[in-house]
Image (tube, rainbow, N blue to C red; front, top):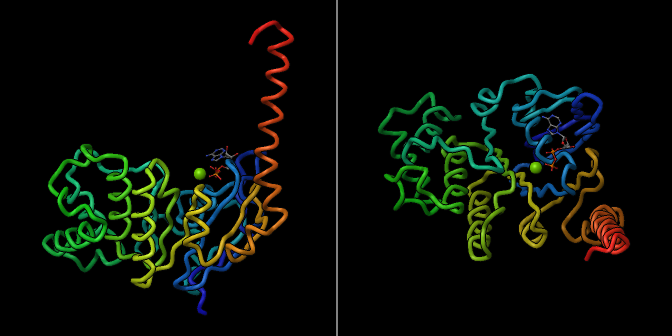
Length: 262
Ligand SMILES: Nc1ncnc2c1ncn2[C@@H]1O[C@H](COP(=O)(O)OP(=O)(O)O)[C@@H](O)[C@H]1O
Ligand SMILES: [Mg+2]
């Protein structure tokens, strides 16, 4: 299958900390790729490097045979890369529709859109994500789930081919998670490629064609969901985390008891 994105030896240093360490990966067109890893693994930094929010310390990013490593975020957006943020970033003073229009005007199809066309595109996308009825409301009146949908609508209205979602399900209840998963599937059904960061493992496993695991900035494993759940290194990275927390808690309790506390 044709590669949508090639990442070669990507590295990001923050002073002495190597947040992303020599990561190489290839994403095929039309794939849904889940990006997982313990807290602080470098997932968000990785997405920031790919979308241009951060510049890399080393390595190379190739999107559809074009080197984009040095391009600014808006240039990458014009080419067809779009993202959502873990914490939604709407224009809080604008209406829901105006927020989406801004993307329709400045995204990859933007140069060709008039205001009425941008409005039409915004309405279309808002219907798609289930926010049609809220179009005229101020963005600040939306609930958490609504803000997540608006974030997705803003991303989609820029007509991307490659979509990055940073924890699109965080803060949602079970019913909302289910709805969001079918929304994410519908994005792929329209031909887009998706890379998404998620903590809810069941969701990642249910929806991903492939999973990439980051730990301490390096690529620990990659494979189908079935391969990943069976991978001993991955189990250790996660269970190691839990094991460490249990041990710290036990030590803390012991210390308190010794000090005569509860
Ligand atoms: N702008 C920054 N400056 C310094 N350190 C950072 C910055 N952004 C992230 N980090 C550090 O890089 C590591 C990876 O962070 P992040 O990519 O946010 O992890 P994840 O999204 O997997 O939880 C963490 O140790 C974090 O503290
Ligand atoms: Mg993160």
